[in-house]
Every structure is written in C-alpha cells, then in structure tokens.
Image (cartoon, rainbow, N blue to C red):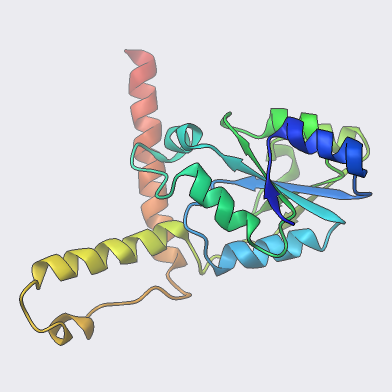
Length: 206
C-alpha cells in the first residue's frame, strides 16, 4: 500500500521488509496535481522497482514559490500523491533541495523532469558517485499547477462579479482548464520567480 513516511521510517521499513532492488527517486512540491504530474510519475516508476517521491513541506514551498503558496497543505498534497498508482512512498522534507534526503535514501535512479542539465540537478553527482543513474524526463509543458490556479481564480472572480445574474451569462465566456495553457502559466511563473529573487536580493542587501 502506498504510504507517506519519514526518511527514517522508510529506511526502517526497508531493513525489516527488504529494500527494493532498484529504487527510483524524484521530488517536487506537487501543489495541485494535474495530468502532467501523473504522466511524469508513471514514466519515472517504469525506471525501477519502487518509486519514492520527496515532497517539499509547506515552509519550504513558501520559500521557493512565494508567500501565497502552497495552495494545499502538506498533508493533503502527500495524501493525493500516495494515492497514485505509480507512487510507492511519499517522503516529506523541509530543506529547499532534496540533497540530504537523497543522501539518506541512497536511490539507484534519480529522476528530474524538464530541460535540466545533469550537472545542474541536485544530487546527481552523489547518485552517480555510488553507481546510480540520473535520468531527465521531458516536461509536460501543457499542464501547470499555476495554470490551474489561474483558472480557478478567474472562475471565482467571475462568480463574484456576476452574483445575482443568470449564471449562463458568464459561463460562455469562462475558459475551463485544459492542455495548452502551459505557455501562459510559464510566463506567470517566470514573473513570480523574478519578484521572489528581487525580494531576496533586497533582503540580503538590507
């Protein structure tokens, strides 16, 4: 059964029940699950015998993505992840990167999604150093948690603005979330990240 465990609990489980021959590890915030996440995790699971997903806790998500994130608290995000068929274990971590978790779990395969170069992937040097492999899987550009959040926000605003009117008057103009909104979401994310980096720079200079 898929479970959410601490790193220590998972290590203890492996000592009792036996460690899978080929452990695959990936990580992320997984704030609002979407088909891109499911496809990515399914592909990652095929690379080994067990898939462990490291998930950022709420405090680290706020540091990485800004004060208005995560949309869902850790317990909810972890439960949704653990319910996915490709995922064997979910392990929360509080640092900005999963490096210490990777060192503790010692995975055989480290997986990252997107256009990362191997030398820029956290933990790649360590995993390859003990004989493991690093794999970069294509990102599902058409899907985005930020894109989903934007659509939800638009829907709520539309409902507020049209309260008391015939719902059909705004449904025809409302755009439900679907594949293909990745470009818009990427632009929003880039602008958000730039604001966070600028704020961090100002804090450092103060």
